[in-house]
Structures are given as C-alpha cells and as structure tokens.
Length: 312
Image (cartoon, rainbow, N blue to C red; front, side, top):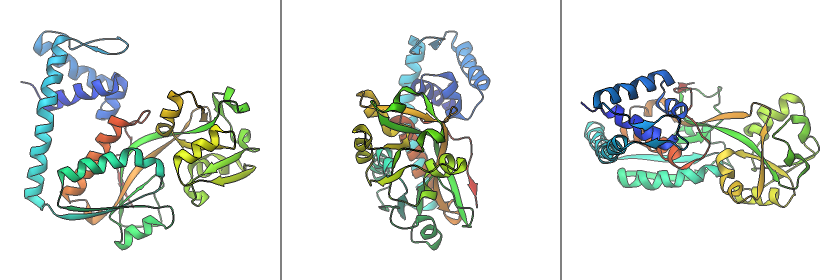
C-alpha cells in the first residue's frame, strides 16, 4: 500500500534536494525519514533515489512515484478543502497587514492561489509600516499580521510560524567589508545603515545585533522599497540588512556582496499572528498552509521553523 505521507516525503525531498532539509520540512528526524524511505524501497524492492548524488537523482521507480504524487496530492488537498468548507462554511474575511516589504515576493503568489481556492473569502492587504498592526489585530481591525516580532504585552494572539530565515548584510562588491564572510557589530559602527521606515525596535539588525553590543551606526537612511535599499547598497551609499531570499536575484547577477551577521548568522522566524478565536476557521488554516507551501516552493535559503506555534 502506498501512503500519502510517503508520497509527500518524496515530493519534499525533490523540492529540497537534501535529506537533512527534507527531514526539517517534514518535522522528522533524519533517521525517521531515512527509515520511511527504506520502508518504501523494501516494499517495492528497488531504490527510489541515488544516495549521495549531487544534485539528487531519482531512479525510474522514484520518478514513477513522484508522478503519482503530483497527480494524487493536489486532488487530496482539494477534497480536504471541500470537506472543510462543508464543515465550517465558506465565507469569511481576511484583512492582512505585513511588516516587511520583502514579504511581497511570496505573499502575492500566495494570495493569487488562495483567491482561487476560497473565492468567497473577502481579502484585503495593507502595509504595517505606518501604523502598529498587532494592536490593530487585537482590536479586530485586522485578521492576520505577518511579523517577525511577537509582542508579549498583547494577549489573546496566536503566532503560527511560517518559516525561519537568515538576516544577512548586503553591501557593494567594492565595499571594504565585502571581502569578509561575516561581520561583527563593531564592523558596522562607521557605516550608513539603510532600513525600512519603521521604529528601530522593529528591526532585527538593531534589536538583535547592534543594540545588544552597544553599537550605533554612523547614520541611518530609510527607503520604503526593498529594491531601493538594494540599489543604494549596490551604489555604495550604505549597507542594509535583509532576509536572505531578498538578495537572491542580485547575488545571481553578481551585483552585490552578502555577509553573515555574526559568525553563526542571525536567524529569525516569520509568523502569522491571528486572534485565538479564529484558529478554528478552516479558511484561515488553509491560508497558513498555502503560505507555507508557497514560501518553500519559491524562496531560497528558508527552512522550517522549529516552533510549532504559541499563544500570548
């Protein structure tokens, strides 16, 4: 018997190209995932993929099962969504605010897919730059906030992790720091820091890197769009800290240098904050799953969040 979780594991392995990353995505240990694949191979009496191949190569048997997965898993998802509609109703409202412009890279495809799946749900989207979105969420003005900064002072909210990402430093390839693989807070003391126009306590570069070390940049310059921030960095007019996925296109073209913030890197988790009373809504649960699937399919350098979600 072929199980859905086995088909799902194969598709995740194809997407990640790595047993380590596939186990992380599946929230399994690497040993448990290896056992699952060995069980499949023993049952079908043939290997499904070539171990230690770079890039990962699937055998004819593995490719046939992936073909089956591509046919079956979307149909199962549609059936589950239809059952959820029947159980809890189809209509609803999702007023969404985001706290970073770089999130548009994955959020817009998510919304496009979600609108097709839940046409009866009223969707609205706004930037959280010019107001405090989490208090608005508690008041009921918003229904979901994409944030990397949970607020422990606000109660009645649930933070569902979407994925974890690394904040990295973008600098001109001619910048003196470009030769380094990673930087210390002190390396940035004489630099112009380019940021989004929000309070510094909402910026990871200050909250988790510069401020704990007591380091102040030479100046702070703001820009509302990620592309503007990167263009300023490319032209040598400052440096900026951004999620690793936001730099992918510029790195591919060789336009910019990427440096880690600290030797171990600065990792953060992106959450979808919602009111606790909304957690039973099927249309919300499906939005969260659609967002995660879209992120892992389209963003480079992200990984599954270790936290399963928490309420405050």
